[in-house]
Each structure stands twice: as structure tokens, then as C-alpha cells.
Figure 1 (cartoon, rainbow, N blue to C red):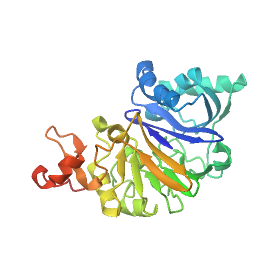
Figure 2 (figure 1 turned 60 degrees about the horizontal axis):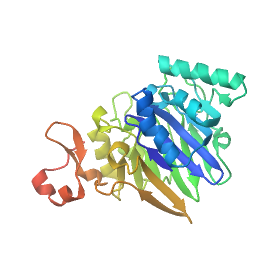
Figure 3 (figure 1 turned 90 degrees about the horizontal axis):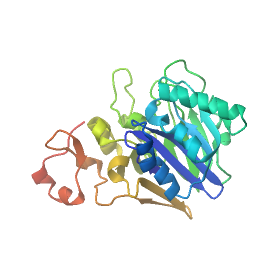
Length: 301
């Protein structure tokens, strides 16, 4: 399970002996150069030639912007997407998928709801459960986001995407690895449970928390990180742009044991969240954590 660093965006690669599942293929960038240097490179380095299942959680550019490039460079078998396209990039991708489906080049499923999980599984060794949405919810692209749980050898990964309350996204508890909602956004008056302590603890609480985000876009928020710190017993907190190693944060499940590969020069303790002199939030390095008293206290949420 590789959380790929695509800048401000999300792309998660699930590899099993039976096939490949890719969840999202987007970034704030839409350029071919950015795609070649990030998503394409990372997929090739992971030995991917065929994408058996591509799930696009929703139509915002930072989740779909590289979709057309994927169709050109890889053998994509099936695509699942609640296709609510709100940008030229997304509309172009939707048209390309419809044309490819008509030509018999792939299968395009333009609706994904709970109960469709079996269809998304790349093989018998991986179980996929779609937990949101239960049904189409209208024109709100984020509210229509697909949230899903992937299980392999009794280890469970929940990908929350940009789904938010009142969507009541649940992972049925006991999640080992959780991605925060909406790139680590803070709770709001309208969406009070987004990345709240209650929502995070309801997921297990998880042993590991991942945020698909780019610091330059001010995500994750300090409040969301503080909520993780409040709930988590184990300091295993990762941000794709900060903790990637070789372009990804990679979790390996083998013999029912879970290991993680990341840039170990960066602290994974959410309590080490600090604000640098230029106002850009950063995590302290382990060396900085030792001298935390001199560096100043962590930011409060």
C-alpha cells in the first residue's frame, strides 16, 4: 500500500499478487511534466504496467488531473468514478473515459456507492469495502466522494478522501492506517466532525495516520494535527510531501505483520508540529525534537 507523493493531491497504490488498484490520480498541477516526474515515475518504479482497477473518489482536479495521462501510458482495465466534473480537466477526462468505454478499451462505471466494494477488489487477497456514499447525494462534489476501506491479511486501511459530515463516513472500527479527511482540513461550524478527535478515535483509534498533502498548500492544518495528537497513543503520523521515501510512504503487509517505509529523518510524532519562522508549518526532525524546549512548544489546535 503506497501513498504516493503527488504534491497537493492524492494517489494511493494497492498492490497484491492478483493485481493493482489505484485510488485517485490527481494533483493541483495538471502538467505532463509534473505527472512524468511524480505519478508516472512512481508507478513505473513499482513495476506497474496494468492498472486493474482505478477508483477516482470525486471530480476535483487534485484527485483526477493525471487521469488522461494514465490512459495514454498504462493499460487501465476498469474505472470507477461518481463522475461529477466541475472543471475542464475533469470534463475532458469524463469524455475520454466514455469514449474508451464505447470503444471497448476499458470499462467505465459512472456510479460508486456502498455495496460496490467487491467490484473494486484487484484479486482475492484484498478485500475492499465502500463505506460512502450510500446513494447519490446531489451536486456537491466533495459530499459525493468515495470513501473506502482496504483489508489485507487482517490489516485495515481507510481512505477517507474528501467525504465529510453529514456523510457519516465509518470504517467499522479497528483501522490500522487512516487517511485524514480532505487533506487534513480542520473541523468547521458546518462540518464539526471533520478530522475531529471523536471521528479519529472512532476509527480504532488507528496506529498510523497519513495525510495526502503538500505543506505549501497549508495542509494539514495545525488543528487537525493536534486532534491526532490528542487521540493517538502511538506517534505514527505521516504527510506524503514530508515523509515520502522514493516518492511514497509505503506500508507492507506480510505474514500478517505491518511495516512502513518512509523518510526516517522526519519526526512522526504529531506533538512535534511547529510553525517555522516564515509561518509555514513543519514537523521537527528527530534532532530538533530532542531540543524541543529550546525550539518552542508545539502549536495547539
